[in-house]
Length: 185
Image 1 (cartoon, one colour):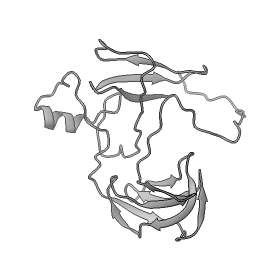
Image 2 (tube, helix red, strand yellow; image 1 turned 60 degrees about the horizontal axis):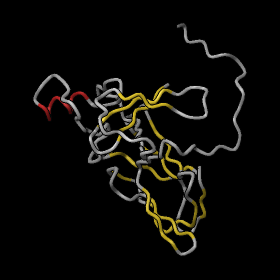
Image 3 (spheres, one colour; image 1 turned 90 degrees about the vertical axis):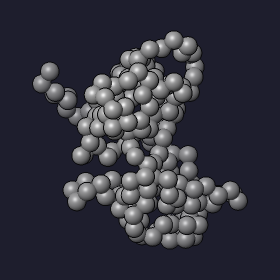
Image 4 (cartoon, helix red, strand yellow; image 1 turned 135 degrees about the horizontal axis):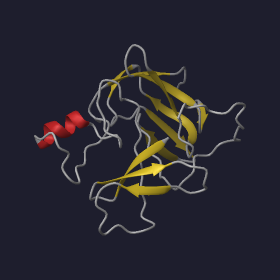
């Protein structure tokens, strides 16, 4: 499995191959003059891929073709994989104002289509008392769907989450594999 990430503001794309190491090595697949080590990168993963055509690093090819007017991908093109203006069907869980939630708690379901649904969990660095939950309806990725208060500080959440590459996602424990994964390769 590999994750795509955007490096700096030039729009370079990199492919991070996940291995058995404690660190990840980005492989730049576009020009990399001026790239510096230790620069912060944040991938934005999304799950709305049905109905779209992407290249190997999750760039939407139809959108790139419309914007560039060409069948070839121009150098340094910057097109988000997920359109932030598209409306999604949002269904909150049975939570209300005043309820306490912590990292990993599921607070909503988003329907991509009639077959695919995505559950939205609170990010690992979040907890608090709910002060606002959006009612069921259609929302874009820019809209606030949840607001929490913790120690007097309010924090707003949308349906899109990003996570810095160098920050590991916290887990309670890692499970050992029962059987090997056979891929046929």
